[in-house]
Length: 195
Image (cartoon, rainbow, N blue to C red; front, side):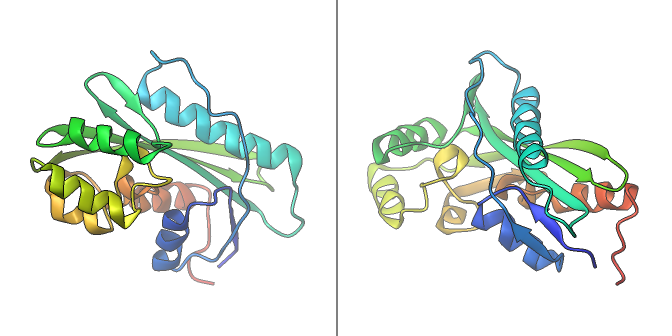
């Protein structure tokens, strides 16, 4: 299989590619993630994923790699887009808000094929309901540190599983890379899964 450039530093996205058996090289891009507060969630994640891939394409042509993949994830709750909490206090506030309630996770992916000079996009959505969280539950979870560097302040694939009552959609969407959609995107651009 051909190696894919993953324009992300996310260990969770890297782990999903490892699980899928897709060879990759992580090459994080740094872009301004500031967006208008009232932007629709699917537009927000697509905009940021496109910014990441465009930054990679314009700044680095990595000789032998024909594929570049970028992604972005956000949580939507009560009409607000929620990104990554910057502090423990912000994470605690997010967990209080999500406690016992349903929220939606949006993940966008943009895949670029260099020889074809073709870019395709996809957005996937999953819905999650958390159990009610006590102060003790939140403190325990915050002490794990899993709230850091993740949209919504929790990691589905970690200890936050204790708090998930219902998941509608793909777990990989919540983690940050919807593998079922990635397979379709790669297939559409004739990625060879057999080599």
